[in-house]
Length: 126
Image (cartoon, rainbow, N blue to C red; front, side):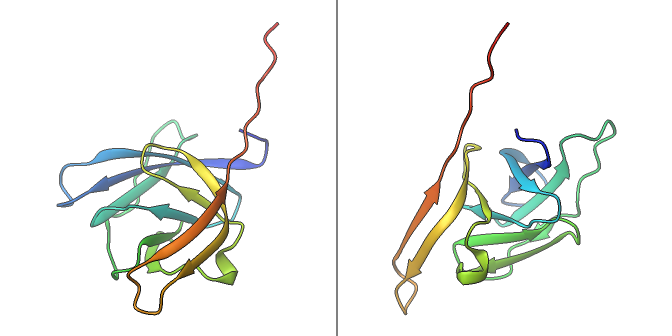
């Protein structure tokens, strides 16, 4: 990943006991991370630490489809992404990470449309 990015390993659980890896979300230094399709519980840790320390188990806070992880403070909040969330990284189940470009939802919350941008690069082998 590009210099200046921090990797965050995210795991999810239905019961807070059995965990499965959701993927690694890449953020800029103090940036929060959006997570789509999160289970009842989430936890995370920095990927670059030799002695991994997991966050506390963070339980779902609402019925919205996206979890907002404040990585520096170790908090979770379910959100309908709004203008202040545009451009943030979104971790999808399976580990893909894109940047949020657009998010719209119906007033009743039964339907939504959104767009992400994905970027990649290939390192030259020597």
